[in-house]
Length: 222
Image (cartoon, rainbow, N blue to C red; front, side):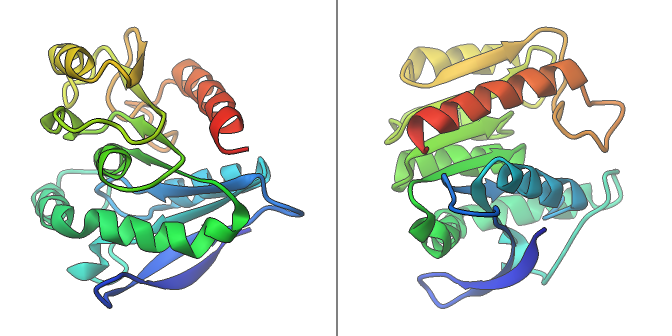
């Protein structure tokens, strides 16, 4: 369903992206922010799923600033490098997400959503840019940024067994940012939506989170 395209950020940086478009008139668009492992097969399928539901979905390759077309395996072999790229990307991340937003804004209102590292990207975009809605899935470092208000309606999905986003961090964030609503899933680990990782995936939580996400998008995007 999707295709690879090129984007240009405001500073002239060029990056790849995966674009999935619905049949017929779109309901709106969504920028899908990747895990720290890259625009993987899982993330491309997430985009395809959104397109099937009527949204233009685009996933920028945020690590192209450091290494073109990188996809890390879901193991510890490249963990340190992926974490380094994630940290190094932060100063540019909102501008790169905005390049994706601007590419798809002709479809209507634009949301941003992401997973793990992409959940942090989602929050930074919600706080520092202009999107119509934001959906963060277990943003690994988003609780490091609780002092900036959300500029758009924002929800978060997280499991109560998430060690990257532990309950005490979520409670702190909720106290500082009551405008952000967290959906908390009992007994669920970090990365629960990724069906390619059997040890983490929780089918029931993933299904419920998607239902809540789609209702949220229908209300705030179209």
